Image 1 (tube, rainbow, N blue to C red):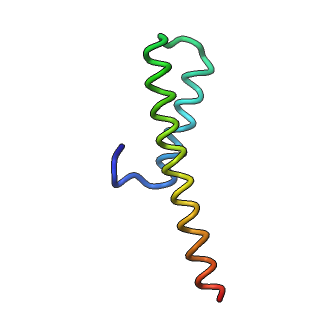
Image 2: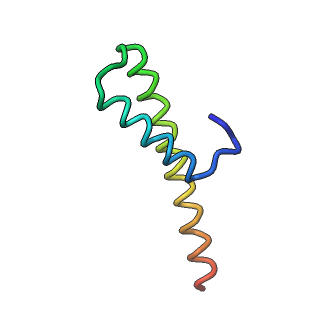
Length: 61
């Protein structure tokens, strides 16, 4: 995964992955690769949101 990826770019890519998987026109190998990429992107987004929440909590104190 690109280390310079923004949260917004990750969400956009996740939407593309979901759309591709919903079409059911990818091979099993492609579907597995997309699922794996989507899982990594989800973890990335979760971490970004956790970091943002921590910053907000610190600022709010």
